[in-house]
Image (tube, rainbow over the protein chains, first blue to last red):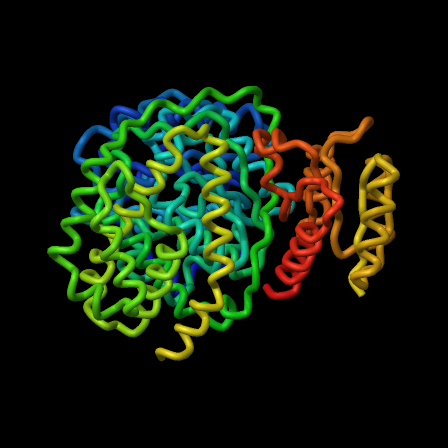
Length: 419
Length: 121
């Protein structure tokens, strides 16, 4: 266990703590991340507490609500929920939002409590059950250091992950972690020092939505045992954002993956092919089917086409002639016959990683200019998988990942030649 | 020389795989089921396992879980006559799968990739 360092204090954005039961030690910490989550946090706290009592009853445990300056009654409802597990409330300073700030607050507090395992869930995970706590936490006490979730999701949910974050993380670091940006996770405290001291911890995108993929990437590159844990029922967010990610989330998450490529370049350039990751938590019975999710092909198509008016000259300068001309060909396809080849998508993503490293334009504009192309790729995914089951769509994603892996030599060569 | 353990309850498959993989320069050992498989792996230390999914007495996907839990980084290639196993999420813990065939070129390619992945990271 490590002591609190200057680096730890520097990363912290804690303004307020309420610890009514004066908890000083806890072996298992469940952190519930929230922001204006009054409608959900009571249920999440009850389920998480039940999970701690049912499955970690012999250990000292605590529920910590890591909040980011909620304007509603999140704090009152959390602290007022009756549980058999003590509760602590932590909050960022006024006006400081961002998931990364909250998770760093959680890691700091867990270190102070000398915790062995930290489980993170989202207050808006309406489908959480006590088994989630078991399945996320138990691998930590079985020798794993980092646990990511495996959900049975609708094939169009989490499209940012399946379309770019998963394939890119997998091709770079050679580990198949299906939800590197999952939001529900667990880690052992051996990783806490990495999270608090790493030089990238103060990056803006990591303090926001990039924190989850950052934590996963850190764990992979630390070489610690990683496990994927099946949490069964579909994840149902309290406030669904629709199929496509918001611009800020896209910039934070994809930008974080791109940023870390520079930091870990000596490692990922050597990686050939990928390896699977251990899986934990089967035997939960038959999962429910994912809830239906509407997707507007017309909207995806419209945003893709709009990208040409806004970014055509930038794309032309970034991409090689063959790639740009193929992209332009796709522009003329009608929605009914729309198809975006996976090889082209991989080539564009790889080119963007090099452009990002070379700072060919300002970071925000560069990342935003990738989003319309991503909409085009997503439209193609929706069309190709529309008659597929969830499992068949997963197989399709796996095949796309293999295309990324087969084209990795192109990325390595481009990265080295265009320094 | 990489050592490969072929686990299959059909003798002709064990013979076919052994012969062809030896010709590729691999050291091949075989097992006809899951009985004491983990002990065997512990003792023989193979570099890769080719595992049949549907054996008379054993479920290959359960064996895969056992192998993955004990030997975290040992590559496992599932060998199957059926595609339906993909419905079971346990199968994602495998490095690759191949459909059984007398043409082993796909199996050989996947073995090469899995062994390269093991040594490159």
